[in-house]
Length: 176
Image 1 (cartoon, rainbow, N blue to C red):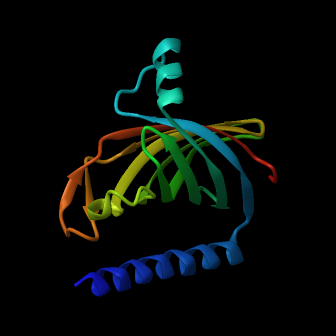
Image 2 (image 1 turned 135 degrees about the vertical axis):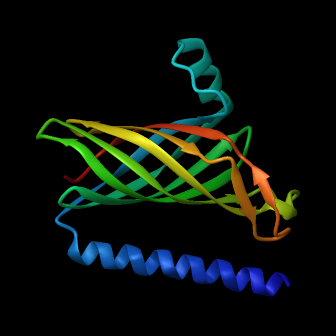
């Protein structure tokens, strides 16, 4: 049974790889860059709450954004540490809500793979869920607020788990 689940994960990653390659071939506009942020179960813009969330569940990673007219594909890899140690790999499909030379806004949604790097938690090592969010670009800086939807699928236990998590990130476009 475990072998079947591993094969399913390989097929999902292969699908994402094919989509990633297909989008890079036809992309009109490509952005890549680093991201820093945090995960929280309660979204707050108070300085003390943000500082606590940032210190307890920080995330570092990279993103790539491929634009096609009003549509985007944005894969990311975030490494989260402190309260939880895991890789988060979302692949967002989005739509540009507002687009001019200095300020851009977008709405995104897509699947998210969570991979727990702590070996003492084998039953939920890899889970697949969904996420949606809003983002804005100001010059070369990006700000994203994403919400991971309530249920994720565990490949090992074949069960659903609740993960209501906001992810707030700040990125910098190295190429645009």
